[in-house]
Image 1 (cartoon, rainbow, N blue to C red):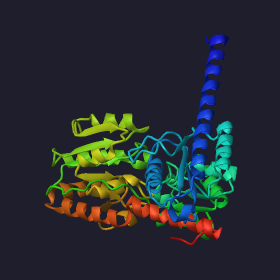
Image 2: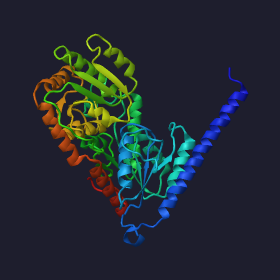
Image 3: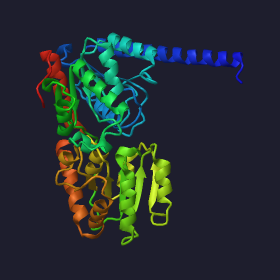
Image 4: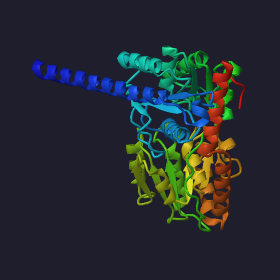
Length: 423
């Protein structure tokens, strides 16, 4: 049993920690505000941009939304004619860049953390930004509650974990109906999208879902594709033997299907190997499956990594077996690295990958094994697809293109004071 004195000591320590966080946030905020008072050296000290100060808000410290925000904030902040950029967020764990000079650290433990929610509202008010961009679900909720005077953009990155593509596409099968919790989340998503100035999402597929299924007014939803810092692309060997998966190890990613496909493939081609980069609730079960005789020694679990580009460089093919996706950054990075990509024909993947990779039905281990077999045996197919993927990624999905599109959106919103037309 814990003594009262010990409990009191912990309480005082926790209170002291919270005070330090608040003081740190206040000090960081003063630095950001002071920076805004400095004149711009261009055009006689006057800023030519419509958006003068941009704030990104995040509540998570890792994952796709974090990687996108880090890369986008760094790109915009480093431009000579770019806006002032502030990121209000936990310290990010990301391979997309370093934004320590842009951060006001703020940790949201849960939506029941009302004290932190009030601090977010206060920080947004003090920053007095032209545009606030909420980059994850909880950030959107906080902005909807805080109602800052700035124009507020929210990015809709994806659906709740148990929502399958077949349900989004209109299936009535009870097996695919989302849980009560996920349906509650979708209702909240619809409400938040109506309260923000504008909601963007990376794929046409998800934009259609917001309009048609969540009934968000069409003039408040638009498509804004993702972007990544392009890794070095290399030419692949004639046939492939090393594949990589990058992502969370949860139900929607269907990594179990990938392991079954690999087991089928190894009956003919025992040399093939799979590296799995990521972590999640199913990791222990997946590791146990990989220890079975038909897979033993052919799968390496690398955990969550911040050196994704390095891990991609060790592989020749990339595999994404998900049952639903919006516009996955991992696939974009793999394309940029010139890997031959195999992915499921769900969500926004077909519009992203196009003819630069192989598409298979979700949940079909035999079809996935056949696609991997082609890359492992058909001479030059992987090399051709990898080259095509690298070109496609650079033409449309670089972080520079992504930043240009975002900046156009921000400028239109501030200039017009109304939701812009679709990109």
